Length: 223
Image 1 (cartoon, rainbow, N blue to C red):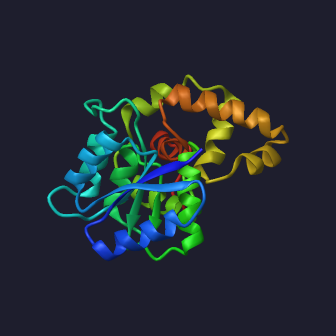
Image 2 (image 1 turned 120 degrees about the horizontal axis):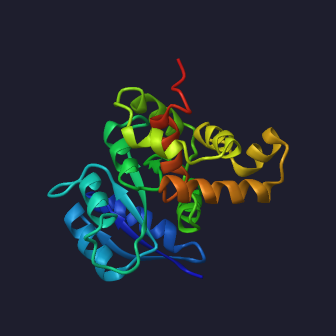
């Protein structure tokens, strides 16, 4: 199955470089390129890509607002893409807001080529990009500065004790294999718990589960 990708960045050389890199890998095809957020929203609805590489800072419409529109209820296309945010900075206030809007993770622009390709494959598969660990660092930092969502406590009460344990470990950025080893249960059992947790808290993927873990108070920012 070929993964179709839309690249949204205001720098033509960056778009061209990413396109050449991704098109060189089997199973990935660049469907289009956008120079700003407004173009990204329009092209996404027309091309229906699997993944969008979305720059945070762009003219006319920035990547955060473009993400909100694409992942919002008024998006006209039937297929909703996964969005991978691109940023120059390892800690970026705006990226946190994009993750809250439903983006599946973020990647630094100076990441290695293999890291970019791997990131596209990860989010296309429906998982969330929680590596490098700076993602968790960023979420923890900004979760500590934002008021706790009142809905989180009510939803938290719907989780079983085991699901809470799994969610705590998700909040720490643990993989399914690491969670299984920590709780002495099968990895398939962890996958089942994760699926139920995502359904109960209304999260699209693990990144939103991490955010919820902080919002609910299950995970606490490191001192």
